[in-house]
Amino acid sequence: MSGSVPASDRVPFSGAVLTGGASRRMGRDKALIDLDGRPLAGRVVGALHEAGATRVICVGGDLDALRRAGLEAVADIHPGDGPLAGVLTALGTPGVEELVAVLATDLLQPDPVAVRRCVDAAVDDVDLVVPVAAGRVQWLHGVWRRSTAGPHVRRAFADGERAVHRAVQGLRVVELDGLAAAATVDADRPEDLTTGDARN
Image 1 (cartoon, rainbow, N blue to C red):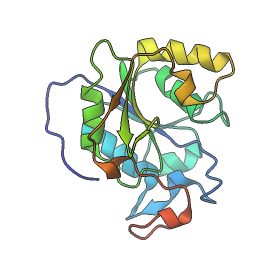
Image 2 (cartoon, rainbow, N blue to C red):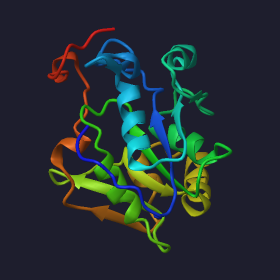
Image 3 (tube, rainbow, N blue to C red):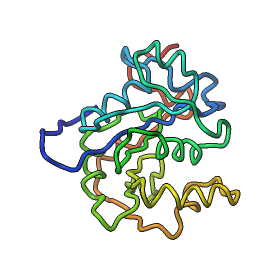
């Protein structure tokens, strides 16, 4: 993780880490892979807390193993239905704030400053903030407004949509440029684990 986030009176937010993926290309549960002494999920949770999240949950996956690692974990309400289901679970979890930063579990260098910048861009008329890196929108590094994005995405999901980028059509979305490029780099395959001693 890089940078630091000064304490402030900014709008509060909660965090969620999507830990329910099948990890087929990786060949093992990505959330629990040890990188530099911490599971990948734990590194993302730490970045969210450092950015100022009041609460951070892990959504889906091996709940017992995540809890043994000291993380708060909740069951995915639609296991096996992809990241959009995880987003819905995060937005519908009691006790989370109006703004919820939902991040993938496999970020190699989760950056609290990047998270905070996305949160700060979620002004009153915005439903979702997502960073853009290398010309691509990073849908699994978003800050969602529960009261507006939640019902919209829930309707899309009920209609059979499973792709995040299509489910958000009609929402007020800010695509944020200028974040550190490394903040959204993820690990899909074993060879992507290029830093530290990765093992499980």
